[in-house]
Length: 385
Image (cartoon, rainbow, N blue to C red; front, side):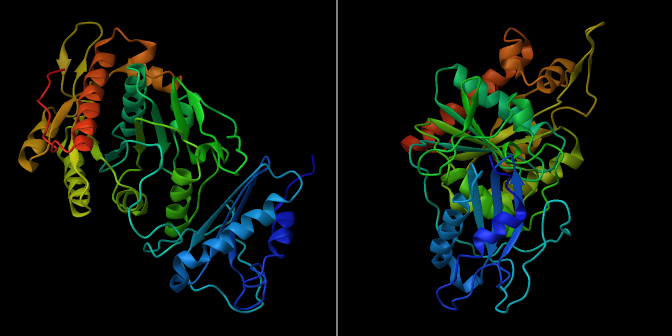
């Protein structure tokens, strides 16, 4: 198989021309962020914001051109209106994962649908969010997804954290997704859960230095250019905070609801309030808060210690008028099974920690079904774990 390089990709893209100017997209400086990994190719196409969805045919033409390159297995092209595209014969941007300079940009108009649109075949979409990092959100998302699947539901898991994808390791998945006949990616699967993550497309230690609009477009394609099939629920592991990824998910797909993961201490709960406020502003119902690392039980003396305080999430939920879904303890077993890529709900199903995750997953599933049936979005009963 021929080696695929950045140069061969740019050569193929040099054959794609814009209809309005007749010049090719490479000489116009519209191609950036070229990534090549084991035959899997990704890049961004920078367009004027005014072009909007009208640039979608150009994106497809670029993907089709790269697909003709010998050795290319899959192509992911994203549109970004991060800046006004060059209209001269200047050289293309030299932005790659290895040498790009970081930059913050405000979300801008890109090719994906301007209004919220459902994903065919997916009944419910659940966002698992957190106000800040390090609170165990991804571990929670994985255990909820696996617990729901173990109950017989058809479940998908989307890793929305482009900058720090952790789902491949937590789900013990590696390699690259295969492509279907229509060039859509096939999700990888383990523990009965279909998964998609940027971590499948780049090396684990490769920094994703992408602008905000590029992240938004990549998320759109991981949602819509993947053959998810029929799913009862798609669990979306959002990155921490209230940035581009959260806005993309909240505005571009009809989220059935969101759950917010937090530790009990005040500094974490401040960010929880901001996260819940964001979901409220974009009309996404918040099903409730999960208090992770809620308490620690000494394995030797069995004494309970509140290392990060205790009960703060319950109090915050009551003040904000949202549900309190339950408590997950700080436990070495959860860390060990997560590091091993074996969610504790399967690795140690009889443990109280697994029972806590199962109890929360049942509540979440009931709330999703109630929202789908139009029964309102009542907060669940508080369950003592």
